[in-house]
Image (cartoon, rainbow, N blue to C red; front, side, top):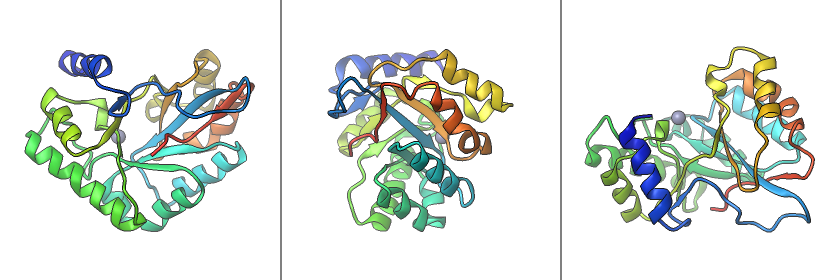
Length: 216
Ligand SMILES: [Zn+2]
């Protein structure tokens, strides 16, 4: 992540209300003594992996949040509906997975809008949650998101699952990174390692943790 992006995110974190930009969340009432943790999955849906991921999340008795790409939602609309039907939240992640730093703000926000409209057409309900690809934003793109009434959700812990090479490394990450209440965890639909080992990884955290979806 570039220094400019880091500064933009830091600025957003400090000056914007949580309804507009969130890195950590403690919004929902949870069971007594349980810490809320938000598992999030980017880049899907994937025709094989997302259904398996949903099955594992159900076994975990968890709710989660999926930041889907517009172009993939268009290909697999039933998966977007299934995510919602199972009580999880859906947000968007642009249509094309473009970084806000690589194209003009006008082009980028159009890509954001296309994805949002696609998901809203599929689900028949408003979709305000959004995560920028690579976590990258510029001050202008952030302003454009605010004008759209979009709620930007960043993350506080990155599993780096897409770069992970083994089950043991994936699970060890959970053992090494105890969440704090409100932690937002970044993962992805598009790697088999994630759904195959989610249960074992999260078993390091399950005591006194409640896995919630991000409120829409
Ligand atoms: Zn992504």
